[in-house]
Image (cartoon, rainbow, N blue to C red):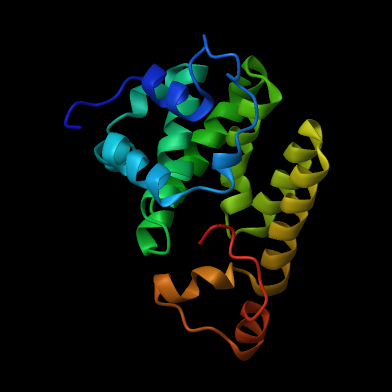
Length: 191
């Protein structure tokens, strides 16, 4: 796709269209993606991801819907499109910037819980412990045993290692002996 998709195109792709009876409900594909879904994501949104990460879609952040679409483009979609490569994490800084801005503007409250959690995920993907603590507090406002467990697991990895060891190989970082031991049985969070 050469044209930039609309904010609505992005939100409908991820959350399903407003007219769909499953709109806004949790989707298994978010957590258990398939190669076909990843390929569709890159085919439809690959160029928009690059543009968003580079700041070319920053005007979108002036609305709650636009900010959410930007976060998806910078945080979620790269993890699908560029799985197991360094590019999966290229948008993390931009996603955090938009997430912080969104919190300051109270954007998350404009959405239901299942959409709101995507405003909070950039904090859980951060390798800064302060962001991890914030992610835990934010996810606590949503509740849900899986959400809370996942937030705590992410925080605990950062508290222990100061980074996500499962990213080391693709980011060209040397793993410590302790990290290598951890990686033998560790969750890789889709990566």
